[in-house]
Image: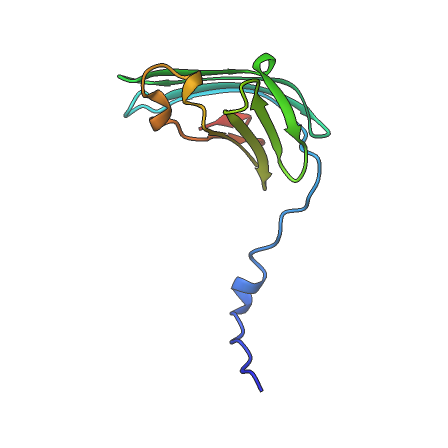
Length: 135
């Protein structure tokens, strides 16, 4: 008879819950600058029932350059469980998902949307819904 796994402490059992699969709804304009590095990002996002109506982002990385993203250059290819936009060349993918009160905007294979080697230094943009701030 197989051994049963040890039970987790009660405080751990109740902490982690799966995120519900539901359409993303968010409307925000935000920007931030890291005081130490000068790294900055600006994003505009309007999503209703997982349909992207507006999206633009600019990321500036000091001593490397910048990256630019605009919905006009992308096609939405996925709505659930997360949103995916793919650029017309088929290489760059922008993914968006929510985790609690935070919305993540992540970029993959998007070096062509950037100057120089900037994409090697790009972080996801994290949008805090309650404060309408990003970092």
